Image (cartoon, rainbow, N blue to C red; front, side, top):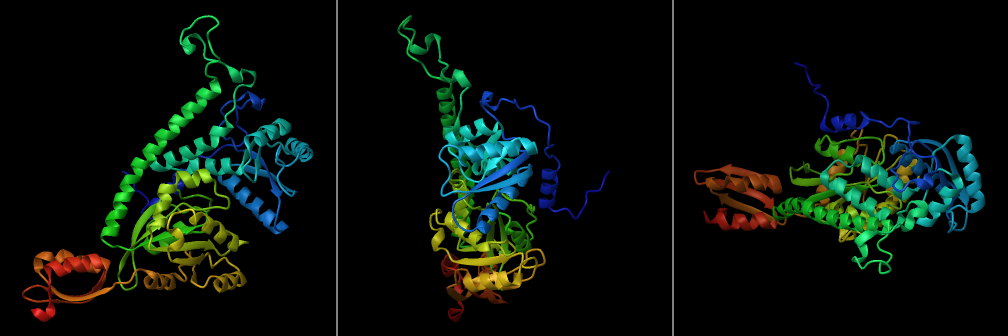
Amino acid sequence: MHDEPEDLAMGDYELEERQALRRVAGLSTELEDITEVEYRQLRLERVVLVGVWTSGSVFDAENSLQELRLLAETAGSDVLEGLIQRRDKPDPATYIGSGKAIELRDTVAASGADTVICDGELTPGQLRQLEEIVKVKVIDRTALILDIFAQHAKSREGKAQVELAQLQYLLPRLRGWGGNLSRQVGGRAAGGVGIGGRGPGETKIELDRRRIRERMSKLRRQIKGMSTARETMRHHRQAREVPAVAIAGYTNAGKSSLLNRLTGAGVLVEDALFATLDPTVRRARTPDGRLFTLADTVGFVRHLPHQLVEAFRSTLEEVGDADLILHVVDGSHPDPESQLAAVREVLSEIEGASEIPEIVVINKADAADPVTLARLTMKERRSVVVSARTGSGIDELMTLIETELPRLDHEVRMLVPYDRTDLVARAHKEGEVLSLEHTGDGTILHARVLGALFAELDRVAKPVETV
């Protein structure tokens, strides 16, 4: 018999499991001639990053490439070089221009890299032409983010959402087998009309596209079915009028750490981008004892691929149905304002989210520059500075949540029969109990409650004045 360690929470076990199997750099069986490969899994080992700087300052361009480096390292790669090119707009043929592509090829050869990652979404033509010049695999920012999501998805719904997003990305980028691109279906494909009557048939790539479209339709049906359970739970909470608070924010801003600090949820916490994909809903209480739910959502990032926003729409509805949004931002980040703007851009695509009250939670105060914190609190009027790691500012945040939640409009003083003590329990959970007095006929309840509970009390209880 062996003892299990008692101090490991659920998130610690998930983190241990995630780190138990890591990629080993340098072990590969991929063909040297990349043009021979029709379907290629992402193999991120030794990479060179390249970005096109079209607007803003050099600080903005370097920040963008630093974020790409963090994404690449989260995906399990070893970053060797980072290059930025100044252009008015990306080259339509090769993204960085043919001359710079040749320089990039020399850099790749000198560093021994096997992959180039571009800081943007490339067209299928740009990907193909750049690969032909640099002679190693080229992927873009979108494919990289999709790869991270594929690694981190663990629920059935999360895996289906990621697969749908990957197929949406892959569909216009399918490639054939070089000269065999126009392979035709022979034999009876043309209806058996004999010699001279056969049409061109269906090419291999057309078959692949049809199969992908069929798979996407099946995944959409599955996701719709799987989201029903979450919708049922959400409607149940709404019927009980339990206020809902959604935690949204940039990836790695500390949303899961904040959820753990507020509720003791024990969910996975990792210093990595997109560590959390599956939404987690936990219960919490305000300082006066009022119950509310906290939902941790998937993190956002600058230029979040539209395929992911579409695939994760059912998950993001947790934000759209909330009564309050805690917008978490990393106060120690070099440019927190751009993080706030990127998250609000995604929130604007979620129906109803722009009308929900928002509290900006400036996290990681223990590692942030005081000047940055002062600047943020001045710009964001409804904000609070916290540290989920140390716990500072959490009490102030809970007080602010309490004031922003929907008001308890009905104050009641009623005699509740002893056979309906469930209503007293609901008053404790959903409202604010001011006093209780037990008598021979029942419990005199003095509380502030929401409309649904008030209607139920009004039906079965008696006002104290008439007793």
